[in-house]
Image (tube, rainbow over all chains, first blue to last red):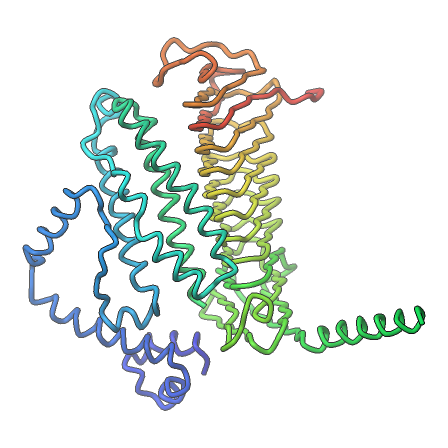
Amino acid sequence: MNCVELQHSLAEVEDASTAEQRAHLRTCPSCAALVKELNLIASAAGDLREADEPSPRVWNNIEATLREEGLIRPAPRHIPSSFGARWGTFGWLVPAAAMLLLSFGIYLHQQSTKPTNIIARQAPTYAPNVATADLNDEELLQEIADNSPAMKTQFEENLRQVNESIRDTQGWVRESPNDAEARHSLMDAYQQKSMLFEMAMDHTLP
Amino acid sequence: MLRNRTTKFLLLGVLVAAGTLIAETKKEFHFNVGPRAGVSVTNPYGSISVKPSQNNTVVVNAVLHSDKVEIDQNQTGNRVDIQSHLLAGADPESGRVDFEVLVPADASVTLHCSTGTLHAEKLRGDVTLEGAGAAVDVRDVSDAHVHVKTMNGAVNLDNIQNGHVEVDSVSGDVTMTSVTGPLVQVVSTSGRINYIGDFGNSGEYRLTSHSGDIDAIVPEWTSADVSARSVKGEVHDDIPLQPKSHSWFPMDKGRAFAGTVGRVAVSSTVVLRTFSGKIHLRKRADKQ
């Protein structure tokens, strides 16, 4: 049984209790970590069922995060070991990318819920700040340097260009707050950055 | 003396070549699939080329460049997954695998790689290609979604008909020749965007690059409602446009233009946008 077969077999026997599964897990730390993580998620999901609403702390955190201009400041955050096990040392990239996407989602939602003619007349209620352009970049590059040194220079240069485009378009939005195209461009720039983070994760998966 | 040295070099070259050949391993896999199968190939290092097969089979030919990589393959129903599996100590050279894959023309294909080339041709199913440094080449695809994501790899799309095309590239140049469909969208940060074609009929074409230039070369008989804008750069228009009475952005002279070319009834919507690059709408020199 190889890794792919193991992963497919989990759909049938999710606790990985068959002899074949156990034999593979003994020799494959990557799959062993995956199974461990799945077990943890399964048990956590059971706990989630008990609560109809997320803890108020969750909403407070989101509100505080959004209020601060740096949606994802590079403050070191603890990644649960099971989560980290699946993504290795890149676990921190997942919430980073997720928060980037969250910011796009909010921005997009604000646009999509307004008629176009209103968008053209109203100033944006939310525009990500320059600070987010520095989102965990150094850590991202360090991880790439450690694991895929050949790609480091390329990521560094592309990240620099994307950050520059974010700064440019943020300036544009500030100068022309009624310009829907400016906001659209800012959203594109953030999407490009999000894509870079996604690619960093994909690249390091092997 | 000189001849002796030359002989040694030749011998060394032969030994190196032989060593390389010995290290390379070829593998072939066959899968029987039904209509509209799904085929996914993930290959961290190396190229992937996909072409249509003659029947309902998926044929995978893989050249492994060392024993530090192996191929995981799996079929679940109508879906085939192929993955290069890097073993300990593998690097971009020793972990390299080159794939040639034949799939039924109606199969949906998903290709991932970090470096190398992604190539797909003569397909009618959806095509998704992603790779950080991968160069992408897609041609002769019709009635399908074509989604491409690259960081700095060049993207070349040729003869995509009735496609739903979305390209995201940070710094790779994007060249599209005869690409038409209901949606053709390119977003780039610094890559240059070249469009050579007629913008089809009643489609939406959005070409955006933050600092890259955008060049659109179209025949005179094109029908399109065109808006172009560069915030800090220049715009040039070689085709006479019927000006629009109303525009949704400031029409700064030399930085924006908007208008209609050809027949309004069948025209596509074309939006060309850049922050600091140049935009040039050119007339194609042909006899049509």
